[in-house]
Image 1: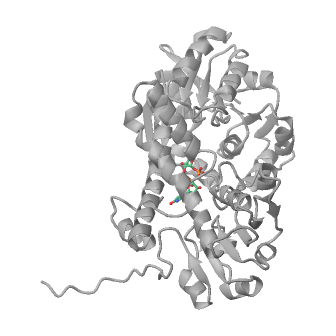
Image 2: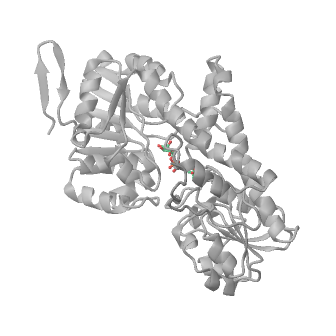
Image 3: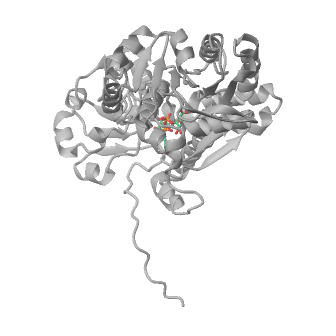
Length: 470
Ligand code: UGA
């Protein structure tokens, strides 16, 4: 039940708000299940009947560790339901979370806001009482201001219906944990009421002392793209260092290890390799650059073009390494492509570096066999011409070169001897710096990695020797 409090000069807030979550993809399905787990009544809504039917029957239509169990548990609790009926959502929710996608537009680097606009329209045109719409999707700054005006125009509730922006920072593969235990919450609000209403919606998280930043709408929109740009820049930074290492004979893994001990730099997102992909980082830096250019401050983020280029070059360079390992010619070479997802513990192949490399190898005439523990199906849908293997053993059978492209534990933990018995040549390109190169070399493998000399040793970190100086 919704309970409300009212003081004479302050509009009421729903202390235990009922929630609708519009868009039940990676973000929305996770958010809906987690909010139900926190004790709220939640209605997940989407125009995609197939997705809604799957979720209703307790099946998550994508791979996200822990979400399947949580969904089943929360459906059974009776707090979580799914529907395609926006009338029901508009009546039901005190707080409506917008979780639809904002992919890159087909013909430009800008974000495609079609789904956000449609979701807000569908809800706002039906809401006739005090309620809060909360944008969680990643949008160009200025979107919330535009949508606020739109809501005023079309909502039967008029100014009683408000908009807030509350970016999410969840990572695929850790989505449930990131939602239940976020690093921080950001509330972009235009009124004190909106802030109090959002605080009520996240009240259980404050028991964990989750840091909260309350700000205006434009800053909240910006936080998300600024965070993703920073992460992308950090990855491209170490990959740029890998390029320098290649020219100097230095070893980027040793370099990253040494840098990581500087607590101002830190080791996270400093992993060199094939670079970033997925449905967020690549399109977010492009949309951000585009928006900054529109706002006349393109120069301020022009470096993000370079971040993007460094990232793309890593894919081409990985193809070069595989070609070199194959003896200089890819045509006819049997290549096992281990991994298709943009990162492990995900079946997402959107802008996946792994799949991109597999495709380029195939285009050069290699006989490529792709295997991913969870993403084969999505990869096949994206690139039906590639050949997919049912297991790692199948993929590597008779391979001239093995290319590790997504660092699933299954690949990183494989036994170099066992693997070696299946391949035609013990040659491996470690596109993710995930293997114990020493163990592979000891088993007679030729190991190649971006930014590392052909003959290299794994970085050693030892307790420092006592200084002789006083
Ligand atoms: C990213 C952000 O990390 C989340 O905070 C954000 O909420 C999310 O985007 C989003 O915008 O929704 P995600 O796309 O799930 O999350 O993946 P990440 O873990 O950030 O990895 C992105 C890519 O960078 C992957 O391809 C990964 O392999 C690569 N990466 C990551 C590296 O190449 N090196 C690293 O050191 C770290």
